[in-house]
Image (cartoon, rainbow over all chains, first blue to last red; front, side, top):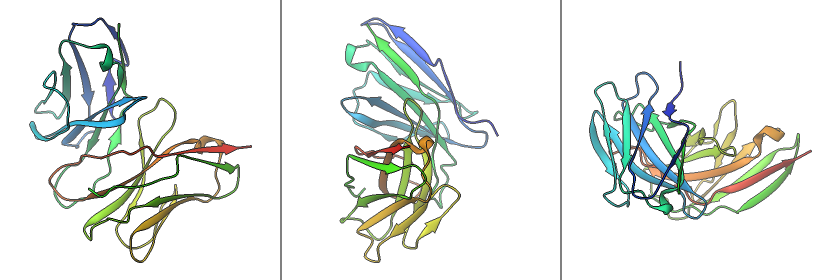
Amino acid sequence: KAGVTQTPRYLIKTRGQQVTLSCSPISGHRSVSWYQQTPGQGLQFLFEYFSETQRNKGNFPGRFSGRQFSNSRSEMNVSTLELGDSALYLCASSLGTSGGPHEQFFGPGTRLTVL
Amino acid sequence: DAKTTQPPSMDCAEGRAANLPCNHSTISGNEYVYWYRQIHSQGPQYIIHGLKNNETNEMASLIITEDRKSSTLILPHATLRDTAVYYCIVRVANNAGNMLTFGGGTRLMVKP
């Protein structure tokens, strides 16, 4: 079974631009979560989507948004990029259905650099 | 979700058992203990989870104290490839979502 894939793996943008990152979960998984990892703040939860609906949201500004498609693939968007948005963005998928616990499977991440 | 406390770093000799402690003194009765690890520049990897009883899988063993206020992850025969940051996470397992709250973790260095 293929793992979680994220595209692109590396990205360089300049301040003020916007960026879209993509995540394809493991086949059959309906939950996709996004995390941001920086040296200063560590791993922080951004949001989770389940069956095309946002189920949980972390403490990030509205510039960070996401969506999930009917095939469970997910995208996250960051608008008006700031230098502090430079980070490794990780996507995780899980079954997400009731009756957990369900382990999460992480992708390799997208490393975003904002200049 | 309950907060966890882990030592920031530990060393272990290759081939020896690595015992990584985690304190979660405010854990609730319906909260599970999860362990993940992150090898440098890769996404975190699920290791094991448990509620009350000790658990073992092909990667590790999880020992949870009777009062559930602390746990230990055991890598029975550590290899150089086990060098990573290990995260202990406590959370409720329900259908309200899969959010994981990561702390600082323990940086395990396995040395030859």
